[in-house]
Image (cartoon, rainbow, N blue to C red; front, side, top):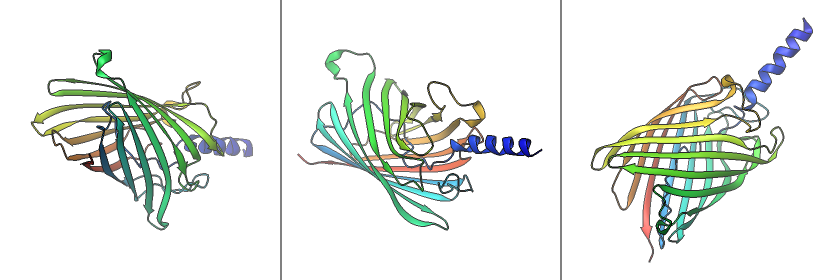
Length: 258
């Protein structure tokens, strides 16, 4: 009986390891276009977890009723190269407000002269998060971005790979974290669509389906505005280890400095 109980406890711990992280800081499927040269985009990502994890797992705080606020500043360096910087903050009921960490993100885009029939760019994101908010204190994200616009229909695919550079529990084997966006311009300045966010586990052996993270967001986007960006969405978790309900808002302001 003790062996059965111990085995059950081990399985429970293993099944919750993938949830031992508050990841709702930047919920966004990237477009391939880099920031225009001589301009900067200031973005505020606000995400609130209405229904999430309620237990501390491996020292990581629960996500239930957590407000994640991320300041992102992206500057166009050349016509095909940009650099973005992030400041992550968190407020969790009972634990107060904290600055969680920072990331930096260079991104390069395939120039139009290459004649590729779709948008293509590559983003690399590197940085630190406090261990109370993520098992992976130092991490690297490799995000290829492919997108295409067909009249009013837009599709973007981000086959992302996350690599733990320093962690007490996770190995450095890349994890596969695909993101997909499909939207349709209902009006001239408004599009509605679906965004998908996943984490399937290590590329050498994906997690069991119940241990993977999969979420679908119903989203609205402001279109054709040269100064402002606006995205809002309601997200629903599809597996036991995914936060069941998250609401997000992204507000951005573009500034031309030359």
